Image 1 (cartoon, rainbow, N blue to C red):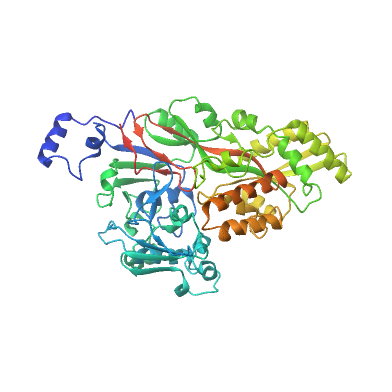
Image 2 (image 1 turned 120 degrees about the horizontal axis):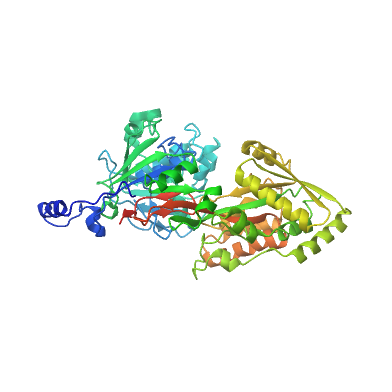
Length: 546
């Protein structure tokens, strides 16, 4: 911030305050914070802004920007928990947990139109409608007939989202979802000004002239191709008095090294860190690392002879020193994980205890246990020498991971040879979907903060379960957690802990390695920046300069 944050002239500030007749709803952020700093920052976006249409985004950079300029029923508070956004109060809920009725605040779009319940209905229908072509259509499966509509088996008229009047929105669910507020924070659940969007047609969201928002900031200067744009404080935002930044200058910077150089020169106030740059800056006081709800894991093919053996899977998982890998090889704030649900992600509904802490450690690094399981496996298979192929994408992180795993397994499990295969991500996904692998390295980041979003990854009927894991006990437990215990939060929580124990400790169905981290450089003067562990990456709503 050395080059951008000029000091406001105190006399001018005093004169301005005198002319305004004292503090009011529109007092400047510098007065609110007690700072004489100009409330202007410059930040990096790691990629282009592709759309402002919440139904059509496919990348995190667009999702991040939509989150600055549009607000849904809920938003994230400073502790990364959902709090009321456009919803005036918590909804009334039917006894069966299926019907949620929301009342809306008096809020405005940036063209002056009121935000009405029909704007949510319109936006959600855009997402679920096959004709609109949203890549997020499956997100609407939570609502009644959502899946049937996107699969052309039901009409939009049957969708469980209705406006009872301008200020009343009714959501009917397919099954009870106790974590609905977490889901509704997501970008696909943002409203759209129906009248404006209909007038713009296919042009909606393709430039700042073809878009209106209702969030804390107003966007300008983006024509669909530009790599710089500006966010200005939205004076008509319902909570504008708590928005402190006046201007955010955004520029696209794809290379991490370019971003760090500009930051060091004082020309950026926020930019991401990754890979070797995370190691380079890890001791910098301006470097920050926040645990991310992303798990890097090995997926063993349960349909193949060797990796289908539970003792092989347990041996592999316990033969890898994950602590050393996270600390000395990644060095970006990532941590070893001995479970599939990450830490700082979900809390016990009664005690507030973190899921990872309460569930505990499963099959952590233990060389003696690994070699015992390995010898048992070789006897069961009738083999002394075993060769497995480890598949991954060809990114630097993926290559670094599988090379470390190869070294650990060949050193710690006698008779095991690991061959590596790194290919472009789409090719890796194609082979994985076809079941053409022994072991594959991948990562999983959830859509919302509930353990079920990790655990259902290995539902035998899930399209994500390319490993072929199939345990009827596990599937039945998932069904209980989704539906039977949906209105019994503590019993549901305990069931999910039991499920993780089955998944890892009993079956070693998936082999978790580490929990990722978000690394970034932030100028000292920039306060209360929100960097999220899942979903959108960053919010400037609470940020200010001091």
